[in-house]
Image (cartoon, rainbow, N blue to C red; front, side, top):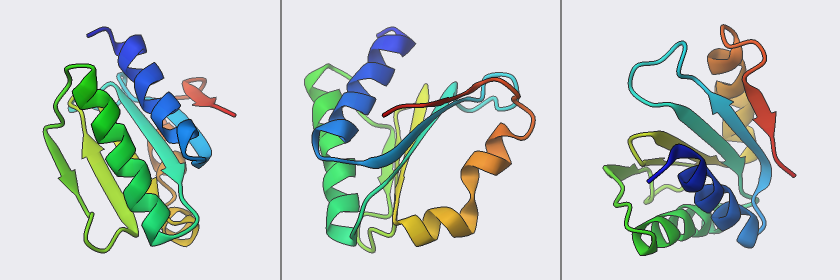
Length: 116
C-alpha cells in the first residue's frame, strides 16, 4: 500500500472518533525504522485505547496488519507500529511530558504537518 494511502486511513480513523491535535511528522531523513510518525491525543485512557483500536481496525480492513501494538493495558500512550508509519496515541499530559514532536521534528525542518 502506498504511504499516502496508509496515512489517509490512519488520520481518518483518528478523526472518526475525535482525536485531538493530530500531527504527521515525516522522519525519513532522520530515522531508519519508519517513514512517518503520526501523533494524536485522546481525552481519557478509554478514548486513547479506542483511537488505537480504530486505527488497527481500519488498517486491517485495508489489508495492513500492524507489526505490533504496545501500551493498550494502561492506555496512557498506545503505540501502533505499521512499519512505514508509527502511530502514537497519548493522553495530553503524557504527550506534553515526552514532547515527541520536538524530539523528532528538531532535525526535520519543514517536514511537520498538522491536520485539523
